[in-house]
Image (tube, rainbow, N blue to C red):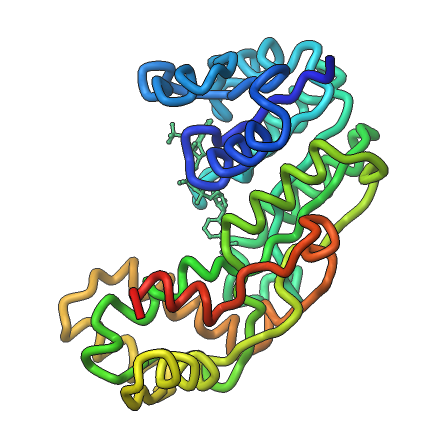
Length: 291
Ligand code: NAP
């Protein structure tokens, strides 16, 4: 039996991959990498084998990866410290001679430090490079920007206020639901012929925030407008509204990247992998805002 190990298993993406694999084939052969076993009761109940391992602890990873045929490697969530973590994971996968490493990277136009989101991109670029150098069979899944972050950028009250206020200009992104990306991961894990491939994982249409405003107007029957201030004006307004500085910086960086088309990679590979149309942004927003 093929042995599959899912990292990030207690998180949203890894958890959704596991649920999809179980729905397809049942839990046999699926293990979950968990850094804190006491947080993994739900995974245990699902019938998975739990293996302790931490991206910060190379030795724990080498022993966790022993005799694993397919490793689904979820990029680290500690953005400032994850380059070392990614190095640990890939080196350990190499040392344990994992059969196939599937890595959740992200879409981007710019690899160098001129990118507004270079602080996010650098650890992905490093992981992709190390994976390719490792000579292990790999699949790199270049995930789109999550549709799930659109509501968090616009805020819970956007329907009430009727206003989207973000410094994203008229840039477009192929916002894609995390669940569909998880289903693509499960399809790669359970399918064949994906070795040494890099896939864009996104819906086949990109949207600007003007498009988002039009979708919300149509769904709610209320006029929703989009205003795109410059980054300075936006930061000042957010600061006056009491938003923490770190949060403002992250939003500004991502919005600048959207404005520059860093995530404008619509693609049909996701649809082919999951064998159905991915959730549209309209359906995603309808569900999220209960419209
Ligand atoms: P999440 O719910 O926060 O899950 C992160 C998972 O990684 C958790 O299971 C967490 O374990 C695990 N983890 C964190 N640090 C670890 C470590 N040192 N060793 C082992 N496991 C560790 O995040 P998500 O929504 O599933 O997203 C998955 C990844 O996608 C994120 O980590 C991030 O890199 C990326 N992302 C992409 C986008 C996008 O728009 N493309 C948006 C958000 C995130 P614990 O439960 O123990 O904390």
